[in-house]
Amino acid sequence: MSVTVVGSVALDTVETPWGRNEEGLGGAATFFSLAAANYTTVHLVGVVGADFPKQHIELLQKKSINLDGLERAAGKTFRWSGRYHDDVNMRDTLDTQLNVFEQFHPKLPADARKSKYLFLGNIHPALQLEVLDQAEPAFVALDTMNLWINIQLEELKKVLARVDAIIINDSEVRDLTGHRNLVKGAAAVRALGPRVVVIKKGEHGCLLFHEGEFFSAPALPLENVVDPTGAGDTFAGGFMGYLSQQDATDFSTLKRAVVHGSVVASFTCEKFGPDRLMEIGPGDIRTRYEQFERLSAF
Ligand code: AMP
Image 1 (spheres, helix red, strand yellow):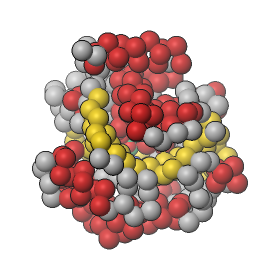
Image 2: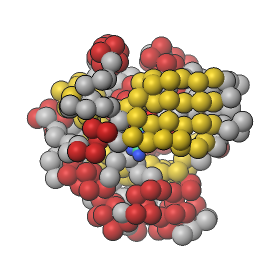
Image 3: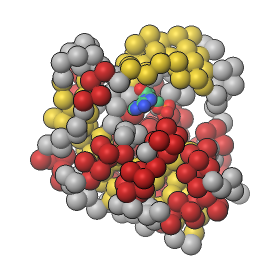
């Protein structure tokens, strides 16, 4: 079984109250892939520039991520920079340089087209539609952001009509539907297409809505949050990786998948960029999954 992800591969400069990480490996597809690779075969589709360090490629290859769909274009790699507040739930984006991403049109290699599971990372909805036209996966999940909701709503609605699941944060639900109440918001999102709605609430965990049922998973209370960048994409990687590994999308598998998403996301926050994700393996995931079970059983 395998999962294909299309999204950004970046060089991130991040400042948090604990320090600064200059031009480190980042990007939504990177975090997603490193998380999902703990569960299944991952095909990464994206683009980097000529300046993208060779050692980052080697790190991704070491995690057995298939990079046949990672284009190397002339020009500079996508760059993003952000600064976190003392309350690390809050961050300001300081700079976004699209660079090679500006001309990017995703091309899925043959094996990536065959994946039964597909994740559309947070890219322009028109590009997400281009991806959907190249494959016929059994289960597609989507991420988006306030920017696309605000400036590309009609295009985004076309994508929503064609996906099975959306993984979205609480403020995006409000922007997309106008509902502050997340139960009403989730119902309004489902009316746009996806039958599965996962709402992330940062350190307060997440909600899963599926047909008439819903489920709430906590986030692990962490003592050391060093850098939450990529936690959302890591969550999506754990979620989709687990579904692909189990090859099932019934409610009970979906519930375990959101817990796996929360488990891998909790690791991401403990070090800068994907550093902590690089260190962990299935044994660490199992131990923390059991911690989650104890945390939420009563
Ligand atoms: P998250 O913390 O889950 O929102 O993910 C942050 C990651 O998304 C960083 O590694 C960035 O490189 C990447 N990113 C930020 N803005 C964009 C954007 N406009 N398009 C694609 N990727 C982005």
